[in-house]
Amino acid sequence: MVKATLYENHVSLRGNEANRLHNKGAYGVQDGELKLCMIEACYLAEKGRISVYRNNKKMDFRSLMNYSIEKEKNFEIKYFVYRDLRERGYVILATEPFQMYERGTRPPEKPTSLVYAISERAEFSMEEILNMLDNAGKMRVIAGIVDEEGDITYYFIKRYVMKGKFEENEYEGKVYVLNDRCAVWDEELIKKLSERFIGKIVGNFMQLSLMETAYVAERGASIIRNGRKISIKTFMRYAKDIQPDIERRYRIYKELRERKLIPKTGFKFGSHFRVYDVSPEKTHAPYLVHVVDGRYRAAWAEISRAIRLAHSVKKDMVFAVIDKEIEYVRIKRITP
Image (cartoon, rainbow, N blue to C red; front, side):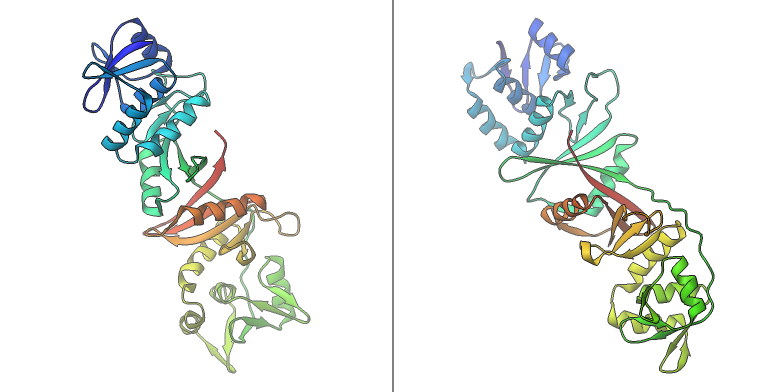
């Protein structure tokens, strides 16, 4: 076990063992001596690779951890994630965020992932997630969420592109406003809508959601309320009183349709849409899409619940983020 010296915010050591630690495990930075950050020092001390001294007195692992926790915010959260990934066989640089290499690789090769260590009590912020993705370049973004028992759940986060194969129709005919939904009685229009998986046939008529009605009207159909034709603008004012977020949701509904996808309600799954990329008659929807804006915040427990539910029904959880532009962000649970 090699002797190392604790300074204010790092640990230094020299000699052959220091060289081996750096060359084989990519620990620390060499600058005449090997400088370890406190996370690296704690890990190597725990593994019995180094003995850390402060003022010529040896520190046990507990004392070294307590010192580090006092010096660095959220140290224990970062340490748990760093330790776990090292134990899984990864070379990981203790930068912030961590830089992780594929198994069997190390510097001077390039890291493949940025890993963020986060407490389950931290707030989920979509703005921060987008910044993570912006700063990652070609690297993957992984969040390691540490729960109160010290267990870690890893999520792979990426901007996502969904594409389907459905061509859209133009529509003629009348859609009648009922109250919080609409109805189609015309058999020809019902047939055309059914071909594009819009609406639901109930007995001898078809019901449409408010969003579906707006979409069909934009593509040529007429909206009738109280016996009179109304404009799409008038209809949206009416619909907004019933469903205050309809403009935001409709923007995503329409955009998904433009991507040749089939969005249907995701209410049963706790999201805004379930989305098909092939015929709903042939398969289950591969995506759940929830509409948020760039300022969206939530508890990580809420995000974890949504992702777990999506996984349990074999779907990917995708957030449709409305800011200046529309972005889709997929968050998927992984095992490193």
